[in-house]
Image (cartoon, helix red, strand yellow):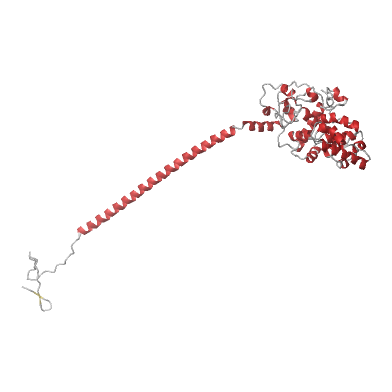
Amino acid sequence: MGEQDPGGGRKTTKTAKTTPGGTAAGGEKAAVKKVPAKKVPAKKATARTAATEEAVAKKATAKKATKTATARKATAKKAAMKKTAAKSTAAKKTVAKKATKATPAKKATKATAKTVAKKPLTTKAVSKKPAIVPEAATASVKGASPVRTVTAKPPTAESRTALVRRARRINRELAEVYPYAHPELDFDNPFQLVVATVLSAQTTDLRVNQTTPALFAKYPTPEDLAAANPEEVEEILRPTGFFRAKTKSVMGLSKALVENHGGEVPGRLEDLVKLPGVGRKTAFVVLGNAFGRPGITVDTHFQRLVRRWEWTAQTDPDKIEAEIGALFPKSDWTDLSHHVIWHGRRICHARKPACGACPIAPLCPAYGEGETDPEKAKKLLKYEKGGFPGQRLNPPQSYLEAGGKAAPPLGAG
């Protein structure tokens, strides 16, 4: 039965029943909401693909990291090898350098000796090599070290004050050894001295002294020599060498003395150097020994010794004269010239100095260039130091009293 609708109609209520076949009772089909099916297989495939790509990327990254690490190891290994090689090379260079430095022992010893030596005025420096007076020559250096390692020497970087003191001390020492030093040319007056000095060029004083007696016996004055026969003068002067040039010089200066100076030798430097054959050296010999006016005679011996003693490095005679003159009072110039020249002729020879018999060895920068053994050095001494005749036929009495001997005349045995 149906229920009565309050509005006056009937409300019919149908209950739908679903049959097993999916059809509602009453013949109407029930409305069913369709749900999309899940695509599970597709999602799984996508996840697998992403995982695979990620794994491949990780492998590639790992592979690159491995290569990078390997490259770094190789680079580090090469750097280590280079570093080792560099160290080895440096070590070899160091050893070679040490060996090179160790080789020039003589130079090092020389430098050391010079550094220690340059206190010639102190007792300590002088005591390293005792001064040896030539007459006695009793000092012994047996068993001594090589010469340059035991002798006190002035350093090369010597102050001006030290140089002046050393130079003057050397002159004082030489004055004690040669108190009788004098010009080694025989003369009785200024004319004979100027002529003899001109003739002494390129020969020995001894040869001049043996030649001039005959010359002055025949031509005693400037007037006589100026009027002489050149051929006769040449024959007399032949033993001195360069006799033609020397004849022209002595005859020319004789004429100049007669014409310009009344036959007298002038006592001024500026007048003397104008005479034929007369230079500054000859002029100073005449001024110092005939007129008593100070002058420095720069002959070959003087030049050689002052450079050997490191008083000067000059080679020009005029410059040497100026530099040496500045080291000494003017009053010492003439005697200084005699001392140096005498020492050069008797002990400090050009080729083989007698260092072992030298009284100024502790003050000499060149000590050791010659014979250092005292006994052997004594055999190298010349003239009165070696017991032989001097160069003058008529030497001063002081020379004879000191043990000197007169030279024989020309032609004497």
